[in-house]
Length: 151
Image (cartoon, rainbow, N blue to C red; front, side):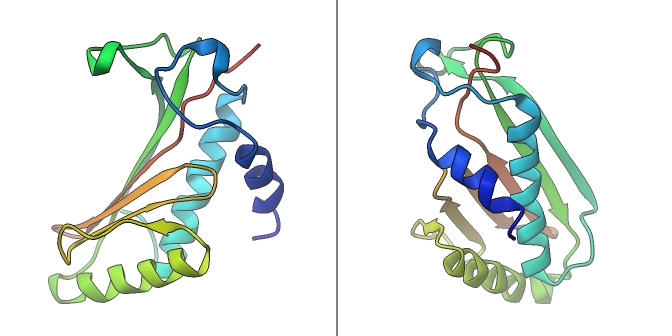
């Protein structure tokens, strides 16, 4: 966890938001944001008690623009979307979600009201959005705020 602190501190100084115009977005290299997404995925996996992800990806994409009708050029504005699948037997999914929810609370993430017992949503102190859904395993989605890759 100590290796995470400098990056979290750096990201915490960044302004959140997507699609608000490139000039007001914080500058951060894509590799640093991808590493942060993967760090949150690793924390979540460790909390789950599941050994490994059966699927994982962290991809850079353009930020939404024009009220969601288009995307920016990712070389100008981007965010990282991570998608992960954890194998979990149907009878264990709720217990896994509970373990992860507890870990996210211990880490100070802001939990949203659950729409159902098979969903958990949280926001980190650096405005990364995490979603868990139990459906044929446990699916984790992580979205970073928008950034600019260079000044």
